[in-house]
Image 1 (tube, helix red, strand yellow):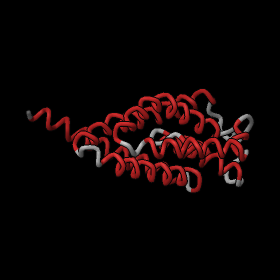
Image 2 (tube, one colour):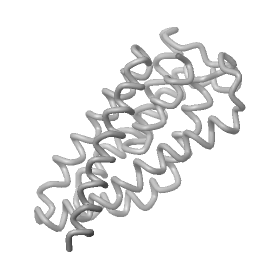
Image 3 (cartoon, one colour):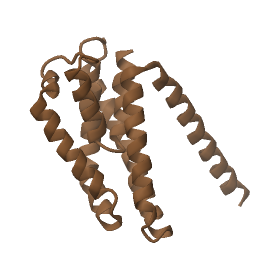
Length: 183
């Protein structure tokens, strides 16, 4: 279960780095997760406050059409790093998986989600004259909150989410591949 929690928290880190970080910090603080050292410091109030401030900045920056692009460029480094941190922190010593493998998996999951988001957002901005940016951002933030909560409170559902998303991506890919083949 700890492995599902760890990987499940990496996915929303690609949408918003600070939502799963804050979720892990609060879960540590309120004893829903037990983080091993050195990650147990995440439950300290001062670090929770720092993460909350960074979340507020990201929340606002991601709603403004021109600023969201600059934010995505900056977050290209932050989101995958956050995915690696939450993966190794949430798994702790409860798993036999190498911490470096957890970091790598977290970086790849968060980085992949971030790449998809950063690629789609300019299209949303261009096709809606910027009006779609706040809507897309709110949906992404809500998704990050829900996925983070599910990963912590019901990690078995992470497997179901991964299967559904994987199936949806496969269908999309196969449909596009069929369209290219037909052309």
